[in-house]
Image (cartoon, rainbow, N blue to C red; front, side):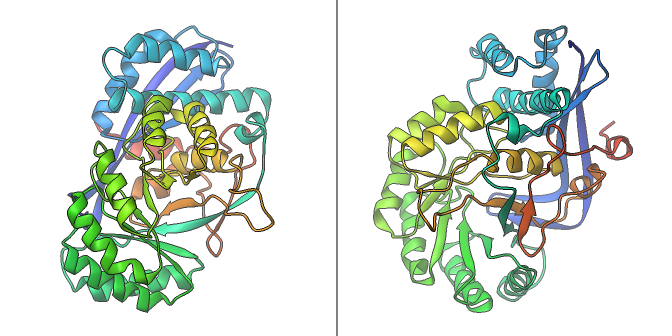
Length: 376
């Protein structure tokens, strides 16, 4: 089997209601989908996290390295592309592009062998995964305490055992909103906060100390990803576990994070950190360091399917009668592309998501959606 074509699909759709987090406002949702075609008529799908125009350019640059090659040689192809482009991008867009390619190659491997990716990776350890709800962004109008408390309550009523709140809007405001959400969802539901690295360590520590009595599951990206000393300062100043990693790349980048003792919960994005090949290596490293692994997921059903295939083979930590099971981040914000891209979209049932059991990623892409949302 040989690769005959590599395509980068840039997709975009407007939102009916824009929303914001601490560093940006969204009026549209975009996606960059990788399609790899073979001479046997099989097609593999992948997704890149990051700016679609830039990741598409990276994938286009990889095409000469991929055409004519055997797609089953996933690790070899990863190493070849990384070595060819390492002078120009050991982090960022190059690795995000490589991530989408790698996921598509694993999808092809599973389809060729008639097995889901988690079987090829030695699993499964589980066939379903608990999900937490990501949402709770700011709107252009209304009282955030009121509408965020209502939204969080709806997630818990739908069966989610935990929700994640966006913070980074000022320490006092964040503390007030966090307290309101804890009251709204009750003491049993999990509540995490995510600053999207909008704070320095001084402000992050102030916020952590104001909300740690609210039983916060983790404080995500409290400071910029380059500031590992800041991560350590926040971690030392609060009992709240510190999480991060969506802006880090490859085993080499996560080696520095792990050896620095900066983070309690590692959150690589499979569509950014290097694909399934690299995410599994990073996960094995995190186990060796005794650090929990909860993948970041922010994309279409392809990204969710890739995360589920990985989660199916991640061991619980620690090995015990009642271990801590890894969770799936399930985006609940509006995303027209995500909702239309798969013929059979991935859904939760009372906060639990089944791992796709079909060959490869276990999904089918709707080509009509590819055409409808294409950036022309």
